[in-house]
Image 1: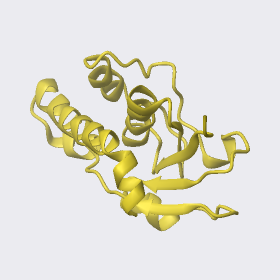
Image 2: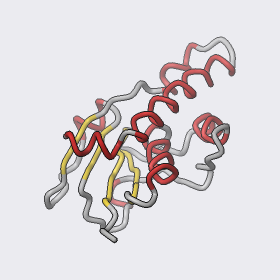
Image 3: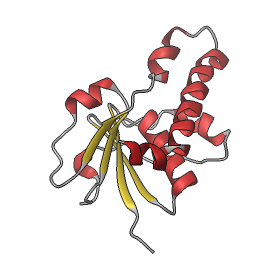
Length: 145
């Protein structure tokens, strides 16, 4: 059996999109990839992200926001940035790591003007589903990039 591929999902605060991507990768492709997530700043895992992932049967309540420096010394084959700020602020990674940017809308920003909790959660659900679709196609995506 071949070794799993190490992937780092990087976002600004490691509170929502990167946490979802890490969890979806573990859920869908745990036999092929070792997913990690981090941020360029440290915050906390967004309670709404926890809620919408739980709706899909995935518990991310035990995950924590972390900086790249806090991740164990892992040689990543891929670093995937999920927001523009992370792409611009992506730290240097030694070795033959491939950096890829795949941007997703920021649910916390989108939900700032929501008129109800349900409307706010709608933004999170849409992005959650977009990330799930991307992750479900991840092996083919990586082969083509």
